Amino acid sequence: MSDVTGGPPVTGAWRPGDPVGDRQFATLFTDRPLELRAGGALSSVTVAYETWGTLNADASNAVLLLHALSLDSHAAGPSGPGHSQLGWWNPLIGPGRAIDTGRFFVVCPNVLGGCQGTSGPASIDPQTGKPFGSRFPVTTIRDQVLLEAAFADHLGIGRWYAVIGGSMGGQRALEWAVKYPDRVPRAVVIASGAAATAQEIALCSLQIRAIEADPCFHGGDYYDEAEGPWRGMAIARGIGQVSYRSELELEQRFNRGHQNDEHPFEGGLYTVESYLEYHGEKLAHRFDANSYIVLSRAMNHHDVGRGRGGVAEALRRVTAEVTIAGISSDGLYPLRLQHELADHIPRNKGVEVVHSIAGHDGFLTEHEAVGDIIAGSLS
Image (cartoon, rainbow, N blue to C red):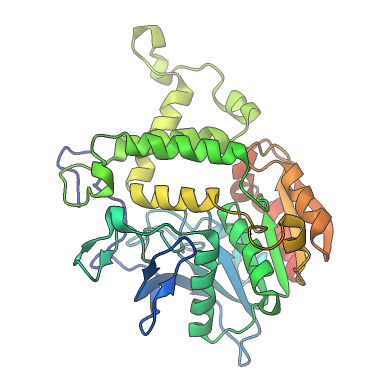
C-alpha cells in the first residue's frame, strides 16, 4: 500500500499478492497453538524461507542461517521482484564459497515477528481478518527458536550440520545451542552476546520511542491509514545506524563534509546527516515499524541464563563445537561479550577477531575475513 503523500508506503512488509521471489512458505502450529514465553499464543504460524543447495538422503548436510533485525530470508541472490536488495551474505553463499552450496543444503527463515513473509504484526490475524498490529503478542528469542525447531521438523531435519548467525541471528544461534544441544553439533556466533546489555536496551528503547512518537503510528494500528509511521522508523534507523558503525569509520567516510556543497548554516545538511536520512527512508520501503518494535524488544529480552541458573550455567550446557567471532571496533556488541561466551562454552577455540573499522556491521561487510571464519568452522 503506497503512501498517498508520495513518500514511503504505509508498511514495507511483504504481503500475499506481492511478488514471491525466491521465498517458500510453511504453515505450522495448525493443530495446536505456539505458546509464547511472555504469555499469549499464535496459531497457524507461517514461516517464509529460502534454500540453496540440495538436502542429502539422510538430511545430514543442512546448515541454518539466522538473520539480523532488519534483514530477512534473502541471504543470497540478486535483487528483483520480491526482493528489494541483494542477498545480505551473497558473497559467502554459493558453490565453492565459504558456505558451499555444493556441499550443504542452506536454509534461511524469516524470523517470527518479522515482516517478509513470516507471521508478524503486519500479518492477517485469522480471528479478525485484519492485520495484528498492536495485538501481536510479545515474542522472545526463545519463541523464535521454538518456531525454528518446529520448522526444522517440518523440513525433516532432526539435526543441523551447523547453525550460523550474527547479531540478533547470533542470539538465536546461541539459543539453539543451549536449548537443543542434540540438534546442533556446530554453531557460529558472530558479533553477539549471552544477554542484552544495558547499552543495547537503552538504544533499542530510544528507537522504539521514536516510532511510537510518530503521529502516524496510531498505537500500532496504522495499516489502513493514508500514511504510516515511516518518519519515526527513519529516526529509529538513524539511531541504530550510528551504533552499527564505528566513530572512526564515520569520520573517515564523512568528516564534516556538506551535502552537495550546501553549507549547514544555510539550511544544507552535513553529509553524515544525509547518509542517515537516506538509510532511514530506504528501510521504510522494505520494513514494517511494528516489526521493528517487536524484534527490538525480543533482542532486549535476550538472556540465555534466565531460568537456567544464570549465563555461565546455561552456556555450560552447550555440547556443540562453537566458533565465536567478534569485530574489533564493535561498540554495540563489544569483544568482551564474545570473550564471556568463550569463557563458559566448553568447546570453543577462543574468540576470532575480525580487525575492521566498520563497527558492528563488519559482520555483514567484511566478507573475506568472516567467510574464512565460517569456512573453517564448516570444514
